[in-house]
Image (cartoon, one colour):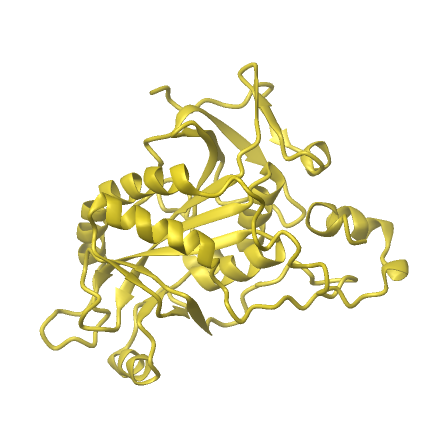
Length: 314
């Protein structure tokens, strides 16, 4: 496997250069990665990626967490991003979620698999298990979770935040690899970076939440605005702090279980990529009836800003 290397011409992709086709040219070949993988804590590389190169992208919302690593898995073109940056440099509250998702959109991605470490709020959701939640509850404070922050107002439908088609693929991939997987449940997205107090953990349990993490709610909202399918693959590392038979979560505990789960995550990614549909995302028209703004009032500057996301509507 070749080591990652800079894209030809030392590239920073301008959004204007790729907004129409989403095609990346490097190493004498063209790629259009329709599949994106976001790696969370402990998953900073996607080892199965072949013919890989690094792509650094500029977006209207600044720089993503790191370079995208573009290559092939099981013969299909894929873009991988380390959510927190290689070396885990960015804490959850400081992640540029909009740049991360917009960068994937610029590359042409339609399906996003998001691997994330979580704490369990249920006895049966044990460390090393995978959970595919189908709902989110937002406990963050003031994070940017929409692209439409000026001139253009859009209200997406978000009652079912996870793409069921993609979750079907992820569930089957987990079962093929042989890991224990639980389908459904609510992901409580907390602010962090500190873990929960005991009172918070017990409250979340009483509210019926199933797992707790710090990142996926914003990603899911932005992916829907970007008309992409999104699915969380939550890797359980601990019981938060509510379980009387287990110590409160620590970084050492999280790292121990993440290391054990990393190999499974790589295998699951390969199986999932093989079976992701070649058809367009079911959410390819999510913005069609979501924009309320008068198109005639949108400035040229705003049209340029939103060209990748909503150019076909404005």
